[in-house]
Structures are given as C-alpha cells and as structure tokens.
Length: 345
Image (tube, rainbow, N blue to C red; front, side, top):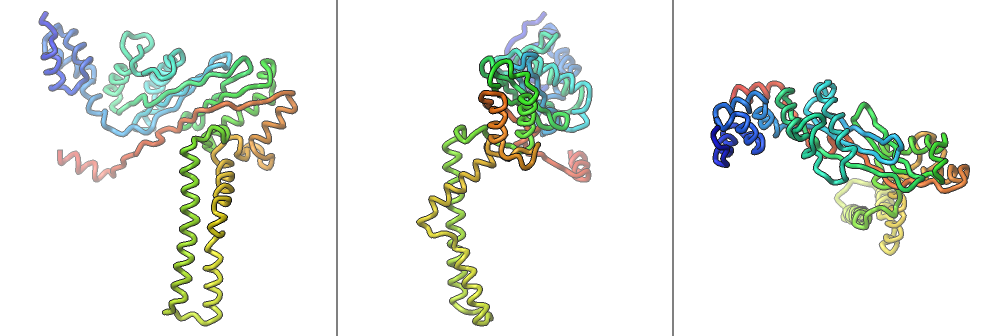
C-alpha cells in the first residue's frame, strides 16, 4: 500500500475538485493508488456534488421537532433546487435524519459536522453523496433550538404548507397544571400561527433593537421632510407662473400644496413618536391584531383576558420563524438560454 501523502491528496483534489477529506478517504480506500482513488470519487458521486455546489438551492423544507414534554423544540431548514426533489422520499428521509441529530445538539454547533444516524460519516458527507445521487445541490442551510422557561413553560411548533414556513414559539402558563388547559393550548397554537402569518420581528416592544428604532425614526423624519420639500417646490412652481390655471384653480392648487406641507417642523418629534407607536403594532406579536378572531383585539388583549380566566399571567417569551429560501436570490433562466448555454460549452 502506497502512503497517503499530502501531495497525493492535493493531486487528487486538483483532478476531481472533491473536498480534502473526501480525497483522503478515497486514497485510503484505494490503498494509495491515485487512479483507483479517482474511480472511488466518481462512483460515489462526489465530483458531481462538487460541481453542483454553486447551484442555487432555494426550495426544500423547513422541519421542526418538539420534545414529548414540550420543553424543547428544534427547527431546521434544508434546501434543494426544485420542489420535485423536495417531495422525494430520499430528500425527506435526509431532512428527518438531520432533524433527529439536531434534537440532541447544543445550540450554535455545526450541524453538518455531526455524525449521520446509522453511519460513521458526517451529515455533510452524506449530503454530498445525496447530491451526487439526486443530481441537485442540497444545503443544510440553518438550524436553531428553543427551550421553554421554567416548569410552566412550553414550546409550540407550527408548520405551514408542508414545510414552506415553520415557527417555534416559547410560552408560559400561569402554573404547571395550566399547561394542559384547552384555552391555553389553543392560544399558544394560534399565536404560533400568527407569527407565521403576520411576520412580527419580536414578541413585545422591549425586545426591539435600539438601532432598529433609530433607523425607523430616521425613515419617518425623512418622509416628513420630503413631504415638506415637495409641497414647497410645488408652491414655488405655481407662483412662478408658466401655467394655464385660472385664478380659482390656482388658488385651489396652492391650498392643496399648503396642506401637503404636513405638520409644522416643531411637531415632527411628536409625530414621529406616534408613527413609532403604530409601527410597534405591526412588528411586535403582542401589538398585532389577532388573525384567528377578527374584532377581538390585539394579541396582548387576548392574552390579558386569558390570564384573568386562568388566574395568573400567561406569557409569550420568544419565537423562531424560518421561511423557506428567504434571503436567497433565485436565479431563473429560460429553456432557450439553457440550451444555448449547453451548446456553447
């Protein structure tokens, strides 16, 4: 058996574009024979996986798991290139197996580096083999976990449209025995659905980042200034003449332009604060009007009423929301362009 040297590994990598660990393993399996190692790489589809790595993967599935006692939840996004592959048994099994590993993994750990269930290979190595077998790029894009607070806490999962969107929500009942109360369970389930439907960024305004608030204030201040500048410019334009408006219409246009100036500049800080208060009702879960019972008021109002019925404070702590492929720029090419591209190569 020839020695598996760094130079040999590098040469195999240069010839196949496979990863360093894949090259080393292939050379060990081939007992140091470079040509046999190339065959090993080809047979396992690792070269194909490498060539697919640059393909945009924005389809797939967002999957969740919650422990039997409701104390911990896991959310994982695995991407592929087409919905057809996402619905396939091989892909779904891979997703389920990855989720099973995440269940016992410490928050922040590299999921891809963990051992795949029933194998001595890592999740990433199995992923590469699956890429070679299926013929599409597959990415374990992100994962996170959520734990309930104290004995009264629970974690609720909600999955929408078969994995296009998923939510984990941590909440607290007034007491441990109230966690099984039907009204409490329904409220938490509905709140998880609300997060999916209405995309709040936090539970309440105390959790909003100061930088985000400052940015929003700058936006509202800029809008007020733009309204004023546009109105002043319009008034100057009208007064300069060069139009065919009669006296009555000119007066009406000038009046309308004056009204579009908005509030006096001295009032802008107060106006901005009012807009920020309205913004909170859009971006905080507690501030939003509930979607499951229109007319019943905000989530916070419903929460308060439920707290009174249960004899203690119902709390919503935090949530995780993963939308499939969010933030990924999808590349589209028409068939003619794809054929032309292939012929050109």
